[in-house]
Image (cartoon, rainbow over all chains, first blue to last red; front, top):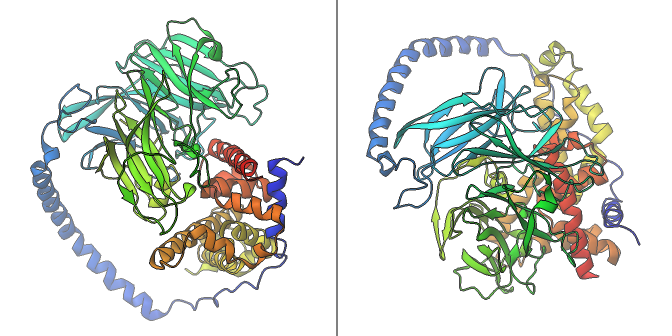
Length: 460
Length: 179
């Protein structure tokens, strides 16, 4: 029997079998030499520019002054609670960290921006150390402490895998909108070149840093994954667990969807355990079935799979419709399983048939109803709880939903949801049957967010 | 400074010569890429034409001739994404359309001629997310290297790996269910 890859190639061959030549290339005639008139016209523009410059500068100062007044007058101008996970009124973190340019921009070193979750305004910027470029970010629970990693040029988050990483601690100083980032070098040893970062996760108390790694190679037969816990204060290796050879693709499911170092592939449960979505590796489970595995960090270093225990299987929605299958996490984002800080559940975006009472979003008339939602699943029992979403007539894969933040109990998710009939999509807080829009945290176009580009590019 | 002057300064052949040579060498493969992404040969040819026109306009800005093909591939992918978005917007306006995927698939003359087996696979392929389909076509069909695929798609090599493996896994599930 032919493999899926063979069948796919054969189908692609068949569909393109009639394409054996290309039509003539139509190029415009060579441009005429620049006319003297155009050269003459350039002169006055430069002169206008020269005397307009001071005027523009003065206008900019006035504009900044006006904007400062305006910022002060916004709700976000009020001081945010210090050293608390979130303000009581909004109950999600006040700040998030992100990169200051699209991941594909390799022209300048990537810096960081601290922004307000509510308004999306940039509150502070931070340039990387000279010659370096930031590539990964992860946050603690206090909304004021982050760890970032950086690599040497070539710049850009894109394709930065395999390069050595150095580590930095970032602290938010100040309150409200008057905050800045303070950076100090961490004593955590530099990740050697030739290493792929699978996951980074700062513990809630910011005392430990978990780093998942694998060799930067396509040879997964002999490669091992490693999960290492470092002391943030001393850089000492507290624990290291590794996978047996040949399981490199399965122990920690993670991938650089947004190009940045994955920051949700491994999560902390309190300050005592780690959790990650990986191969179920349980009796009766197929290789394509996944479970959240929990690893108590008091266990000695050793075998990653042997030391961790699998919980209930992660249900996956069926691609391409799935109207008759039960609701499950979107397989496109199955790495996007966000484990809650209290260790009771995980949340994911997904779809499938369900009886959940949710608002309706009509996609096309006359087709069956489907559910697109964020749901929480109990780690102990696998029981699902719908957080928020929609009943829709969109086809299964014409929709997408993925989460970028979950609160400690799993009752709130910040995520992205897109419908085939909606160009704009929805980004914001999904909770208890409701949706609260938030500013898109990363520059880009809707289809870039739609394909997972928000993943790993924000840290709360 | 015109395109050709910029090109000569950068050590490149004249724009029309360089772009035409590249087109002759790679246009068929890129049209095939477009056909698989869009399911429509005419649209695919337009996207490739636009990509090479864009390459022509930016020829003098290329720092390295080796970047030209990567630029063309990325432009074709961007063009396909834009065409698909346009199709979705058009379908929103046209309420007589039942589903975008169904319409585009049925409108392709070549698909009608496909065997049942290939039609099933192609239908499954069209249900993959764009990124997975792009990675699969570039890596498994056109034989583009992992690094070049990553450059064309604007993603990391790790994502190319994960996208292709997820695409194959999803296809496997879909085809198993349908068979």
